[in-house]
Every structure is written in C-alpha cells, then in structure tokens.
Image 1 (cartoon, rainbow, N blue to C red):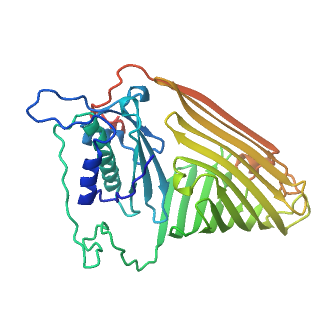
Image 2 (image 1 turned 180 degrees about the vertical axis):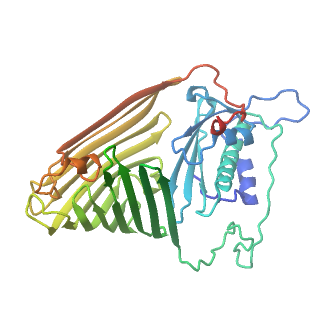
Image 3 (image 1 turned 30 degrees about the vertical axis):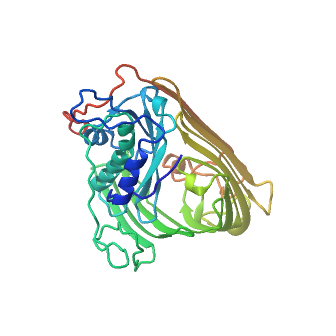
Length: 446
C-alpha cells in the first residue's frame, strides 16, 4: 500500500500533484472520462467507512459533503474499504491516517493519505480537513468507475517567498519555516465542579500543566495533574462523614529514535495513592523498545517489546507488612504487545510483567487481549478479556484496614489476582445504502 503525506490541515494540494494524480488515474484499469453529451453514466463507487478510531469520524458530515460515491453499511457490498485511524501529537493535535483499499473490480487500487490537525484547530476545522482528505482520496475511484459527471477540480495557489516558504499563514509552502518555539508546546488546564445539597456537598478542582516536544528524532513529554476533592455526607442519625482526598500525579518521558525499529529513553513518574497506602511514589527507569514493524506503520500494526529497569521510592502513610515506612527498591519490567487494524476488524494481545530485584519472589504479571471480527455480512463479534496475578503488594499496611475506609473507597484490601472478560456481537440487516442524512429530532433535545 502506498501512503502519501502531502495533505496538511488546510486541505490544499499542489497543482503539479493534481496533474500527476489525473495522469496516473487510468493506469492499471478501465477508467474512462465520459462526454457530457453521452447518455451512459457509470455507477458511483460503493464506499464502506471503517472508523477504527472514532475521534472526529463524523459519518453524517462525510455523507453530506461527499455525494459522488455511494456509501454502504457493509464491507461485503463495497468497492472501496476506507480505514480510519489516528495518533495524538504533542501540541494537542492529531495525525489521521486514511487508507483506501480496493475491493472487487477495484482490487489492487490501494492508496493512503494523512491529515494533520493542530491543537488549536476547532472541531469544525478538523472535521472539514478530514472531509477534504476523504474527498481527494475517493476521486480516483470515482474516475475509475467512470462516474465523473459533476466532478470539478480547482486549485488555490499559495503565496511563497523567494526561498519557497509559505507567507500566507497556511503552512503549505514547500520551504522550511522558522519555529521560534523549537517544536515545544505547552498546555495549562483548570476544571472543577460543585454539588450542594442539604445533606450532601461535594467539590472538585483539577489543575494540570504539560510541556511536550516531538520531532522525528526526539520525543519529550512531561505533565502534572492534581485532583483536590472534598465530600461531606450527613447520615440519618445526624452524624457527618467527610471524605477529603488530594491526589497528584506527574510524568516525564524522554525518547530517542535509534532506527525505524528501535528506540531508547528514560521514563520517570510520581504519584500518591491513599488506597495503596502511598504518601508518595517516585520511579525512574531507563528503557529500550523494539518494534518488529517500522514505526511509521504503527497506526495499522505493531509488535512491540518494551524493557525497563530502574528504581522505585515509596513513602508510606502507615508501616507496611514488611515493616517499612519508606524505602527505595530496584525493579524491572517487560511488556510485549501486538495490535493490528485490518479490513476484517481489530485485534490485540499483550503481556506485561514486573519484578522487584531485591526479592525475586515479589512479582506480578498479566495478559490481555481483544478482538473485533467481522464474521460475515452484517455480523460482527467482539471479545475482550484479561487476567493479572499479583505477588508484590509491598505497600499493604500492617494494621487492619477499617471497614469504613473500604466502603468510602479510600482504602482497598490487597488482591492476588484479577480476571475480566466481555463477549458481544452486532448484527445488521436491511438496505446496504447509507447515502441519506436526516438531522431532524436530534438525540440532544429528546
């Protein structure tokens, strides 16, 4: 599959590329441009949209804006299967990958486009950019099907400086642009809520701060998050119970790209947890990661092995069953994950284990997996599950945990295992076409 990354968030296309696209369209197929005076009109290509990432996948908007194709509800009826995935970026934006897979008479006509949004883009601007990416990618299939009546292609030239840089403010120039921030992006957030009743009051405030820098060679992420929560309840007896909890969490990550398959870095983090008897927990761990597939294919498939070894410091609220109030311990961990997003659906499986090096008997490991599989026309099976085994509850307090603390969710009894599983299916039948959009009686007002 070929992937093109020339499309930016404005949706503009260089004129030379448009000409090259038109020249390349008829190759390898029987596509023909019909005269407007001919009575024969070929059927528009049938398109199945597969939003494996639901962010900004506005199906109603796409159907409303792109009308030169027939949208269908089942992959088995499609001439073109569109796979839609995305990856978050450091500035708050996202990079969307739109893959076009030809089926039936269109088999072998595969293509791909990327669309990159900025963190400052409105949702409307982001959806419009994605719509333009879909529109441009589907044009070649409309031409191949001979359904070109009514199609028009236009080009808006950009203002370039003498060095080829974009001076229009759209970021479309082919030359390099000066970045005074050197790829650094910062974000501050503040949210809160309040609920006042006669027998119950609660309030919460959440400040957060992040600083990130992402280039092809480096990835630097850091963030701080705080949750200040107060809760008061009055019982039938008139007694008052308070449950005030302050939670904080910080993370720092530095990654260096070594090759298309290998990365090295340093992962550090800190947090507190009342339920886990930890006034403070700080960890630092150098790590190495290997991806069997090139990282540029991570949106569609990945097979990753991640190993880290470092130290963990803990300051406990109460003395633990090992007689410690604070300690620093060596630890290592290994994680392996495989994920794939294909025409038939999604699948993933993972394994993770961690172990304290001063006492090898203190370890934990777990498995997880999920499959979303299209069995046949209209029938989809969804299965997920996981299991974990824990033998490293070093934070467990020596004293008994009061029942009131457990009921309030402030403390938790240690558990040596956890299992979870889910199973479900969806079946759809009836008309395969999905071209009509009717926006009356929206759910938001019902």
